[in-house]
Length: 107
Image (tube, rainbow, N blue to C red; front, side):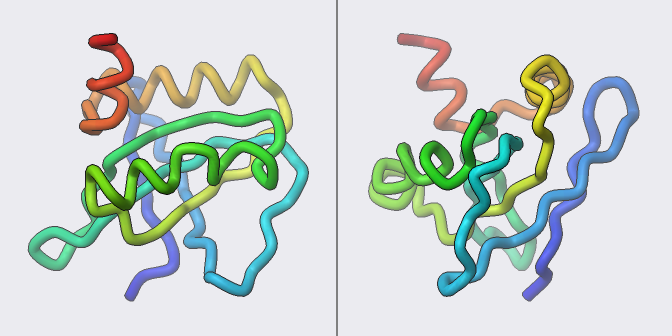
């Protein structure tokens, strides 16, 4: 199983996310994160988020992601600057529409 996912944004930039292993603690640093599930041998992204504190925030929606969308893994990308985190998240969401993000936009 791959420990990274590269996600291309609408700008052409490629963002590398690292898989968080079950025993690996998350950092208090800010960053972007994705929830993913396996689909036909590749990772399917079910949510793209950003957080000022990955330790406190990256797991907040995890139970819903697992229950409603079959999420299997959490991937993170460190990025302490809020402005840059939001730009990267927006860039990615211009290319893909993960189901949890689509649901959040609809409500």
